[in-house]
Length: 318
Length: 318
Image (tube, rainbow over all chains, first blue to last red):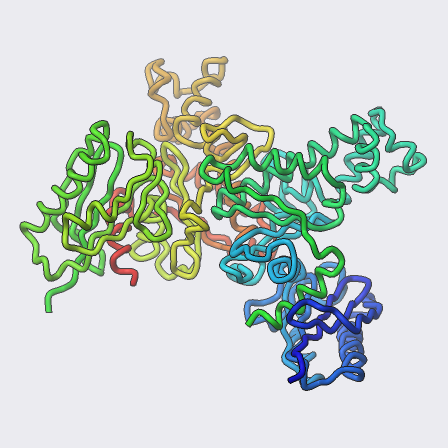
């Protein structure tokens, strides 16, 4: 019997990645198309279908169990409708499942990308064997996915897991979402870079200045991390404060949901050991004592395969 | 056929309340015994059994479906073991279910008191018809219970719902739990009273001074509320700040779990409209926009019957 596979689709604001994935997580037939998001939903849906057709040409259709698709935005509980995906102009509310299914004779599962990343780590990555955990993705924004008893916890309308909009300081920085003192307003890549640049402009001494040759728009977590690794005290302090804040938000989740494990992925996580140590120390010091001994904060393992492997998990989970 | 009933037990640090409750929430045969907690778990278990026996004397045993018991502390997922209940010295870890069952031929369900209060509001109170919600109890401490799909969400080890230990300010006040900037460190009754007293001592002008005749140990939410209702600006500001902080913690939970409804109970909630308005305004302004239109923050309805009716719900839920 032919091994069953899934077509995995990772829909982002600039690129759509495709792959054929086995139940064991082996990826073949990777393929990329530009999203061309500015041309609106009908065009983007056309791109998705073009990618799927391209894959079908060189694969045994009978072996394909279905198409798993991860994307930004809120996916309705029935998995059929996508609402307000950021970075996809003109989408608002799109009945994506129907539109894809009408032109492609395969079963289709759609899920939010942060949830997909969590599911991918659960099936193929850092969280194998973990029944319940939080996945936090520290990127341009801060995304989250909650896995409870092996399943994505989606909330009343599919929007759960917004750890980026957990309060860390009720009197704190304004957030893009309209809220105040959200985690994302401190540690989202853009905010982190901006806050760091401001501090240097205001006179903080740091190797970061030289590393970006005075162009503070180039400050990013990797640069801060590089300066910190070279012993730059300012950069070390920035990472420690960032870690303290992330750890506080994590403690909130662990206390509230009585969880123990958090998987950390995304670009900011690449800032390395100083940041991860600060996160762990902060979270551990803030959880209630019955939780403390079990706390595990572990780096994600799937890296840039998270989108594809997570999307494939949608097909293999049932 | 005789109407089925439950024996409900509400075990607190000073009193044990008992009642017979029908599936419709009618309470009869209320009875109270002192906990005499200082005499240790064996004595307290004896008091529980004495109360149950007292009730059985005047009730048809055949009609009794079981005993539901709510109490402080973490109740294990199997409902059999209770760990570290606050205000019950000497308990640490007690296999309570076994100890009660061995001396009383009835099925026994044990649950944490904050969870019990949430279940009670779901079945008999403010949250009838709500599938998923958070219950927050603003008392000496701050308790919480999460109901998801009609069931208590208990987490990995039964400790979920600790909204009192959600961070509201990562650089904030130290909390009794060892954490920093927990909600409870701002709005638990003791902290709230202490912080208010400190402000008056430092020179804030307020009617509260007269209401407690200069004895600041007597400051409690109801007094602050009374002063506020009489137009005292200091008291109004205290309640507004308290509401802002509570609302921030609520927004955290709504954003994280994609919920809409929060039921507010407990003594601090009795502080009334100024506080409730501030809570609602803060929570609403801080949730992400897709959640905002659905937010409902409603007062608990069961008052001091919450413990008994909630405990009875444990028996009628299956």
